[in-house]
Image (cartoon, rainbow, N blue to C red; front, side, top):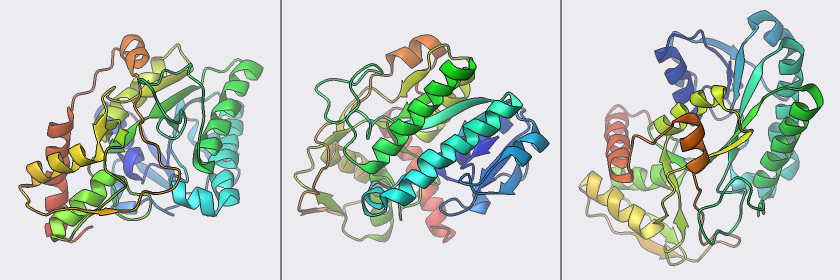
Length: 304
């Protein structure tokens, strides 16, 4: 079962599961996901994780649940912290309760970028957690509930802390990442804005690599694992690579820095590499080139 399986990252997890021959059930309320993201080979259930899920788990009897349904927009979490907590915390507890009753192992998608705060070096799983927005706090609370269930009930659920994920099917609107936003501007010839001086750094990791690590986590021994590239890329550097792969001469413009934005965020993926035997397949340039190919095709077909 994949909650949020009609969304950006969730749909990549669904594809990876189907590719290895699994029976896959997608749970999504389509608030931000898209029905067309769900492959025909998966069974779709339009449900909201904030509501009880015992009946669905009882019907499907999933061996594993990849819990990716989330409110993932930092700005929304600041403006609507109660809504953010309802989706990210109450929704996670609903999944935990259903999984407990039906013996289902959970792999929980969390955040690395919004979890650790400012980084002096690539953040490790045991570093202090210092979220700066309700989104990071609600994800941290969800993690703690999951780990509490492991201690209380002897379950072996796993937390995956993702870096800045990019790739095909990322919506350039709403909770979009900067890659999707840049490529939308490059495709339309409009001028993208870079907030602040553009030297703030992030850890960019391709959605297909995230999906591969997420599936591998079913065999994880550790309860918390980072999934990132381990490399910092500034916003200015990212824009230059995006322009290069898009063969575009569009220029950016600067805008005032946004309050509370991290200057430096990067994850240490060493534990996931050692424990899962996972290695990212895409470096930044090849991943952006593959993403641009999808964007170009989607624009031609008017799907974004």
